[in-house]
Amino acid sequence: MKKIRISTGFLLLLFSFQMLQAQQKKATNPVIYADVPDMSIIREGDTYYMSSTTMHMNPGVPIMKSKDLVNWELVNYAYDTLADIDATNLNNHQNEYGRGSWASCLRFQNGTYYLSTFSGTTHKSYMYTTKDIEKGPWKLTTIDAPNHDHTIYFDDDGKIYIIWGNNRLMIAQMKDDLSGAIEGTQRVLIENASAPAGDNIMLGAEGSQLFKVNGKYYLFNICWPRNGMRTVVVHRADEITGPYEGRVSLQDKGVAQGGLIDTPDGRWFAYLFQDHGAVGRIPHLVPVTWEDGWPVLGIDGKVPDTLDLPASKGLIPGIVHSDEFTRKKKDADLPLAWQWNHNPVNEYWSVHDRKGYLRLTTSRVDDNFLEARNTLTQRTIGPECSGSTSVDVSNMKEGDFAGLALLQKKYGLVGVKYDDGGKSVVMVSAQSGEPEVMKSIPLSQDVVWFKADCDFKDRKDLAKFYFSLDGKSWTEIGSQLKMEYTLPHFVGYRFGLFNYASRQAGGFVDFDFIHISDHLSE
Image (cartoon, rainbow, N blue to C red; front, top):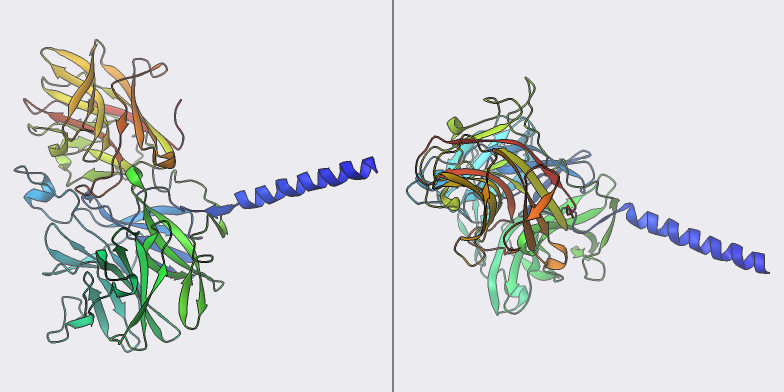
């Protein structure tokens, strides 16, 4: 009997281990623990493509690719720069923080990919088309109207529609060349799209995405009841022009805004995102079943922790990417993980002037970090991450400040300042809303290493900054930064490499690498 008990216990232990392994091999929510909001997803065969929002970062409107809805890689952008005006160029104390391009719509029709977006900076809408979504080129059509959070839909009869707005949703038929709405077709589609969530609404229904399933039209929106949470509202109709009936389809964990996607084997999911503090707005997937012609989101109305999809292989290098700045002849100057803060000034950066280095040269005098041009950024990722770099500061000029940033309105910096004839390692915190030097240590060498650790677990949103004189032994400097997601910037925190001048232009620094990992360095 004793042997049987031991064998039974062993089998139970083995079974539990196998069950744990099986769970670990499944995808978990969030599927992307990084700032990838306003997703629009399509499927062509066994390949999914997704567009997202990066606001004031350039190139803009990232395009990602996946074979399983979980593991994504950047493959393209819709544009290099959106416009050439003071706000996009950080000129004359103007900026487009929190604006740029917002929620996009991605479609595929008759061999052509269509991507549309709108801008709170230019107050226009943009229609991009291409035959090759991964390589381009994109053709641009501009509309002199900022159609807020719009969705484009190609109906079965060949007509093209656009739906947009906040709470009071509008519809119009588009011209065949997508240059605007056909005169006389604009009208109210749904007078009060937030109504299914009640009458005490803080954020009216927006983020429209339209789908057609089994002959019925389904319009997805997000709204936010006061003292409640971000909520998914779905309306359905037999005709695209209505009338529509609506209901609340999900109200859990604040996971909302997105739409529907099916798999090649016939399963359905809703792709949505969650406001998740300083790391940004992070994508979730929710299984969908169908009852009485309605999509039913979640498991018993809840967002599940695990999904019957392949496990994530991590966000490195598909979403973020360490970079040694070494380039072969056919390599792009920058991997797709990099984006500039606002429009870059291409004459003042290079990965060729010094082999194996990124050179940032100051082009003008700036008052502060947020006004500085040519800050090169990548997303931070959760639940924790670390970014480190090495920089040669031997060619700085008096008044220059260069180093590693965590970029948001309440930013943190660690770098080298050249003032009063000497250089110092400095940590700056803008946690109070204004930049403050938290620590300054004299520096007597030309090469120095910097590191920033980000802890987003349980929404701690804490960052620590370090420097090293040999790349091996690290010293924490300054104060911890309590990172805060702010609406004026509307993006999650980003690692940034920066160099700006406060007295005279022309100084330069050389960054040797950036290393990004998905764990803390300590």
